[in-house]
Image (cartoon, rainbow, N blue to C red; front, side):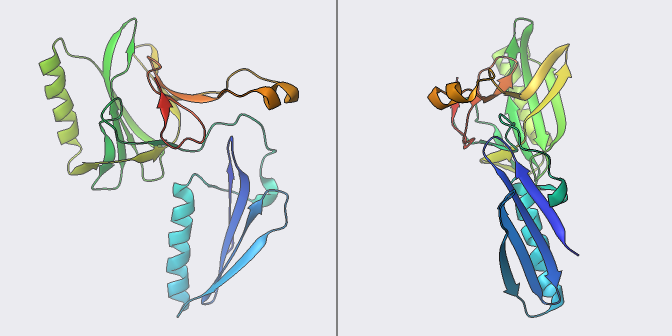
Length: 223
């Protein structure tokens, strides 16, 4: 069976298809509207081809591709949000990011607003989609905060710290919007966009806007 996928975000507008034909995998890819490039790979058996195809599909989904008919791909729009944002482990705002033994990804962070400070643990599946948001008010003392952070990490079970790639999202708690929130910036005409040198689209960690990610979404952020 032929399966079709596409990736549309602020930097991409492309498609990819895959089909298993006996012991052979046939894939096509290219920019939407362009002539497809075809690739064929042979395997020892149909079952080996099926297994390899599933692996390739999983890889594409992890890169942010969506499954859908190529003929029905929406018209491309400028200033689309990125499918995934990379968060690199560091010793500043991203010192609690990584993956669990089960394959989920996590980001534990410390949002703040005029209404107070918070401790937020976000859980994502292997493809970067938000699964759960556990948001708590910060504790009265630093030592209590540290103990609570340890308990949240312990609740994850076996895990390791490292880089992750997750999709922008927004949730509400305590009457405040939390998340990795896409900001498309101000709408510019074509002439202004050609002259624009500075980054005009962001994904920011809210509330607090203390991590502002920008294209090409490789983990670099402003504070």
